Length: 490
Image 1 (tube, rainbow, N blue to C red):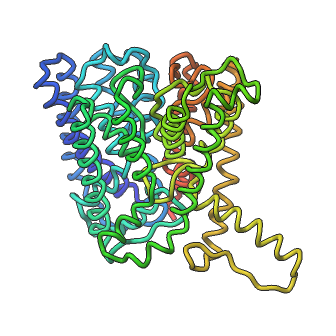
Image 2 (image 1 turned 90 degrees about the horizontal axis):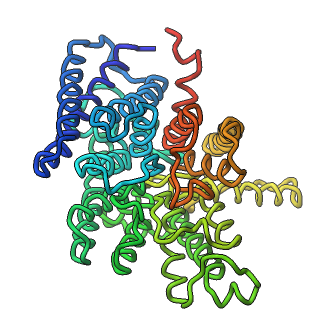
């Protein structure tokens, strides 16, 4: 393990985090809020630590695979802890555990919160809280690759941080790939801010909500989430969530005018099909006419079909893309829509997007492998290959995809058992783990859209912090970082 390159790289990240903290600091100066001082102090200290790390000059600059995983895993924990200090110093969140939980939830674009009264929070801290979504959406390590290039093998960092079964360079150089992706990300975010502002949303709200939508995180500025905004704003946010849940390689193809290749984007097709199917079932479960016919009484329903479609589409897009915004308390809906929402919690968005979950591409590969086995039973001598986007999928990718599923089930099960010691009901315990490991935010029961995670024990909150970071990095960087073999010299 090349410890010097690990420490040096994390130092660079702290330097960048310090610079990024200056943005909400300037906002705090404009709003004349006392919490500005806490942001400014942490920003300066982070910049100083980052500059001091330059004194440590590694003799070997190559970042191997294991260094890439360790840098990625450690940096997300360290950045979350440093980013939590302004909440702690200002007194907005007096508990260190709660402050780290809130910040980790922001950076990992989870959106789970322990804050019950957002209206009382200083706006500069609300801005920092939402900004962590935007930073974490594409990844702060990828952001570093744009501004602080090095001679190291940055592709190992990019693969470790980027979600999906496989990550490839869009163009020959990693730095240019990161620049293209962030340019697309910035243009889409800016377009969303403008659209919401034109639709009547206040500028401050437009910025915070757009950052939360772009990072598919879900932090808002009101305790009611998106419920108090106009239907037009809700429709714009629905479209925004769906757009940011699409693999960014699709937008790259559009920019490069490779329109024929778009026809082979199989994952996007199934992503949209799952969205339409889930919206249909949730609509059936929330429309008053349907619920009365089946005798589903006593649940929150909509009197008109238009309202049912509107809120169902919003909530399906929010949960499927793991954004976590809400226009209604979906925990009060009938059994069918709640069951559908739980299922799409796990499917998630596309690989290579800012969304979380297992990813649609993996779900497609799992289904295709099942049918492949069926085919082998019927035709034992047939030679078949699993294909995605018109290309044969390498066995190494299939193996990694299957190992991910087993690792996911293991981490989920262990986390669920630990959370159960808090004594909450099954719905709350199960959905809280599902909501954090899939980076969704709200779950069902006590952690629904109108609830929070504040009632859990400190142990459970640290389990959630682990799950959020592990889920955002898709398990492997964290599990590899925890392996003793990773830290051996050779």
